[in-house]
Image (cartoon, rainbow, N blue to C red):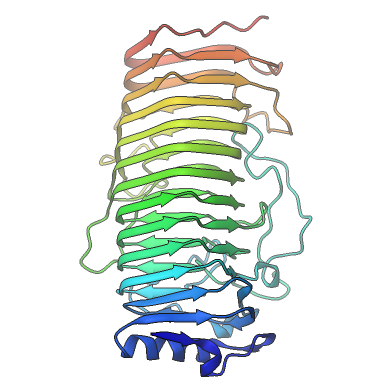
Length: 438
């Protein structure tokens, strides 16, 4: 069955608030046992819409759902038990499209969902000096809440919380005020052919965040964001009767442009495991891959294990890879069995693998990789700029095989090829790593 939102009173004039009309169409579809809710061509302003089991929300070509500029039109922080907010980052548990504990839910295009971030961020053009990541992270500026208008902005734009069998296909998600597409405690999800287009200076505007979710495939996506492009997380404290495990994930055939990390793995106190990343083009990123088990001194960390990344091409890149243990007093975090292969990049930052006294990254391998080091394209604080390309400490069983390093335009601040300390088992097999010419 088809349920056109026009039949429920929606008005495509870009002025009328259509939240109730769209929700009525979704509710009718769900009550009838399922079907497709159609958004026809036109601009529809809306607040939070909750999808329900067996409902397919389809945006036709020319259809635009745009978030309301009024925070009162979004769901509250206590709208559902698993909801969260981030006061420090300036966003609330207010979403544009949400599905909670639903099954067989689908969101598709070719239409557009627009988060209307310009209604909440300060005007474009605000810039700061890059703070870290080889002089590239946030080098294109940062936009935050416009404090003259609001105290908080909406949170994640499209969320699926403890859902089963989810599809998001062939749709454009743009101008998010926060994370764009969030899977939390969700199983069996297919994300395919999605275009995410956020301002590159929009703080917290991640692309796809996969948290405590399993059996997830992400493919054929084009992602441009002001924060992390794709994250794997294991933060399950707010979930109901669900293990804090993120596992069995594939990401393939994607083009990424991120003002911070192309891929970030970490956050939480659970497990991230069994993920395959392949056939990726990175157009810009402060970091290609960041693996960090802990972000605070709270006695808990994430186990990150059995991850492979292959066939990666990157340019305008800061650090190709950073694997860092995090807080010294975290005893239950881990990073092990991580494989990079056929990773070729131009980079202005270094590779860093750093454990601590309680946790050593283990069994990290690089095979058939090439790193072309170029000058830093923008200012980098002296205390944040690396002077050594391979910086490896407190780690075990590190392998470089058939890899090469090329100093294309070595910055005068580069001083050393490598600094290795307290590493048990470092092999370099058939590698070309020339020393700096001083």
